[in-house]
Length: 273
Image 1 (cartoon, helix red, strand yellow):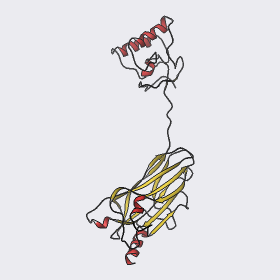
Image 2 (cartoon, one colour):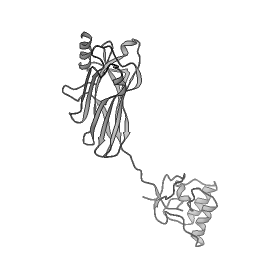
Image 3 (cartoon, rainbow, N blue to C red):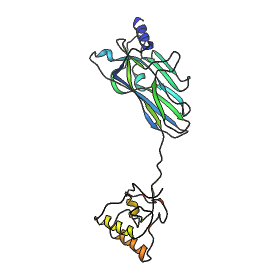
Image 4 (cartoon, rainbow, N blue to C red):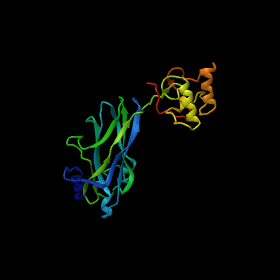
């Protein structure tokens, strides 16, 4: 019982006088999730064996993770597989998971009230799993914090010797898929001046025959849209359209638009808005 009281006091003590201990790192994952969907976020711990050996085994830890509750809500928080496996006789001796304060959750655990079982040092140890539902667009940082609860639950680990430490932390993120609109260009406008004329023929010929600078938009130079730049076909096709009533360049033409075909040609800069 004396050992239990020592562990409990070390877990709940205010930690303002401690510096972060680089032997321990708590990490929350980053997941891309759309509005209306759930995201499962593993919280893991890296625990490195120090010079004291066995005392670096962890008997308890606590932390909070704060988020903007106007953008996401907590669905569930459970202890991770490594946390639960640390006590082979059953559930943790003490466990508290609080999700009722809004803007985050707080968790505290003592693996065994008598200190007989502990979490051995390791990397990517799953200590909990949090499930969030994204309710609005925008990035949602998942920041380790010591402000949730009354009294507030500190970010803290306690080793087998009853010594507490503040771990380093790596915050997580509910990210969103950023859709980049396709680049628009005018097919045949090799020099990107928004006008199709003989200057494009000259620019394209010098470019493709290696006698002049390369253009900023390979797709615009691919006059016949076959996915390749050909000194004869593309230059000749432009000449035939401009001066011999030949077929017009492939779309997008004569106005700005995206490339309708997937190919490896690039387009870094165009005259299109």
